[in-house]
Amino acid sequence: MKNGRYAAIDIGTVTTRMLIADVADGNVADCVREYTITNLGEGVDATGVLKPEAIQRVGEAIDRYLAVRASFECDGQKIPTAVMATSAARDAQNAEEFVEVLARKGLTLQVIPGNREAALSFLGASSSFADGRIMLVDIGGGSTEIAIGDTRRDPLWSHSFDVGCRRMTERFFAHDPIELDEMQQASAWVRDVMTPYFVDLAQQGYLRGENAGEAANGAGDSKVVPVDRVVAVAGTATSVVSIRDEMEEYDSSRVHRAVVTAKELDGVLGQLSALTVEERRHVVGLDPERAPVIVAGLVILKTVLELAGFRSYTASETDLLHGMVLVLADGEF
Image (cartoon, rainbow, N blue to C red):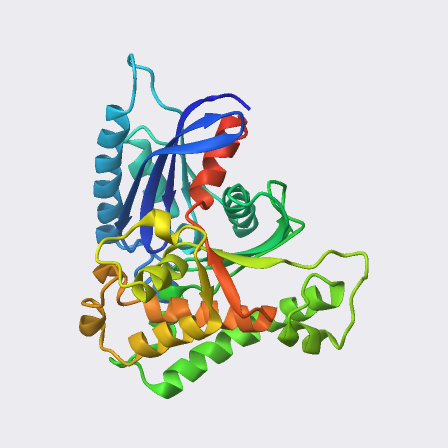
């Protein structure tokens, strides 16, 4: 792994983010993080096409990020940069148009498959935990990645589900505020998609929570080490902490490694689901631009915890971006 300064840009279904970081002996030190809700995946689930205005929003965010990157360059040395797009770009029929827009800005966009996204998220998140076996949960706008493995190693198991907060919102939530039957249908959808995988994980011995044990009827390979904790990354998981703690100003140092109980998660979900989108925009601790999709994200996170048989999760601020930086420093991008 080569020490130095690197940049990673992640273009997701809901957000566009950038991390500039210094890598030294396998450790990542953040220089700056940028975050913009650009909603690239708006309408993609129904139409299969990226909207021109969505592409434009991402392009404008990227222009700002490139100016920030330039301010961190020394002696005219360009910072090696990885640019990646995930679920919305994977689903879109016109993804090549988006690739060309970024190419004109001097950036090579990689539209990566879900299993690659899961592995990179796991690598980034696990870098913050010294040891143990974790289940990584990364809830995005169009997909949710789950990976299991030992920290600082490649995951032993991973899967990308086409279940995301924007996808769910557009499919199920037609009323404002959301109606009870819409919530129930959305939750049932997540369970239908994910349950077979969690039953299999429990049967293999990776899960030992109460619900997981019941699903597996006590089966499992005694040689398999089960998961110690659930680590959740991305805006849904971190927003729960900032809402719970009523953060007037987001404080990543308080969010990182914060433990959220299932009861606390239920409380935030109950609070937000009873409000209109406009009312949610004024909730302390919630980014107003995340208000339309946050409830869907919470439904997904709650369901994952229940299926895994865990009563809490740990929020992590190290995530996909950190995984991208580490792989870039290894010369693999």
